[in-house]
Image (cartoon, rainbow, N blue to C red):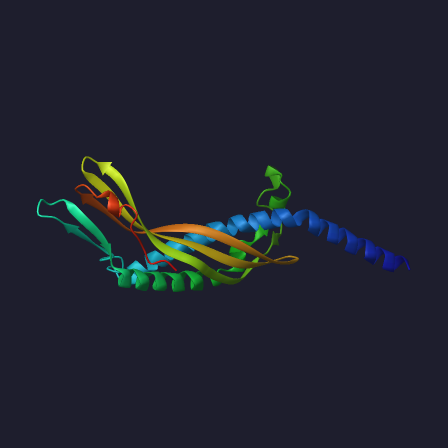
Length: 201
């Protein structure tokens, strides 16, 4: 009877320890995922440009009038959609292939004590799946000097990740923005085109 009571006490202790540590594990794992996913998003663009240096060229057309003023900024929807599809495929593949060692959390970091931070055996987490439920291109215009405007094409996306943590699974969402094009426009940009958007998923 005594051994059974000892086992029961040990199980209760482990359960209480799991309940106490789970919020900290979840928070730290979420921070790790956000950092890693953001890095993978940027790496996806770098890898694409290494293979095709012109992948982000020709995303929009600037039309000017007889006096040289800008009359329209028109999106190349076909190229934007192809670029988005290629980037999303790469992002999903890279996020799902992240090594669990990259998501490990040293046990000492869960104590909240600076002295023990990043020390001790690791609590591992694993990415089970990743998805991008929302991704769209946005055009951002920013004043950059006298009669000059900085135009950026930005991919805004949400990445949803299912994590396997000790004690069960958890969903995490990472919001990210990726600048895919940046050009300095010389001339006044009409207010009509300040809301230019394209390629929404």
